[in-house]
Length: 118
Image 1 (tube, rainbow, N blue to C red):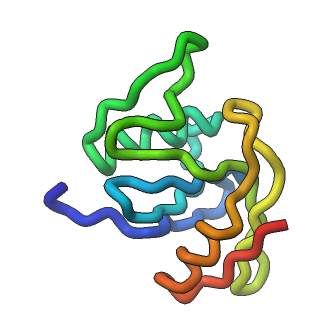
Image 2: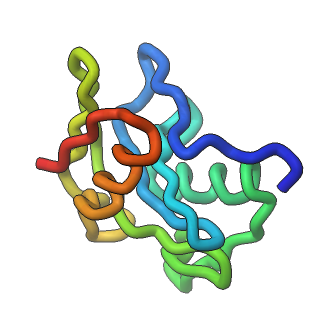
């Protein structure tokens, strides 16, 4: 990794409201969906391959494995942004998990963003 990926990517108007929480090489990251990412598995795949140059494992069901040698998906769901707060909620259909409060608190400390898990 020559360029160090940001802990949190930008939220742009009109994007899908899905997000994932992951650790890569022991560091916490929060990723909001881009227009091309229609699923949590898609967000995970694009994040790993594009930003981290990691080839993820694929499960028998054809989705990206939530855990690999250097990464782990720890939370997934939806988000709303209001004022300066980001609210994480819901569950992932792909992975049957919701947002991880401990991970959100750590990202908040690292970035200064107010992230709330409902």
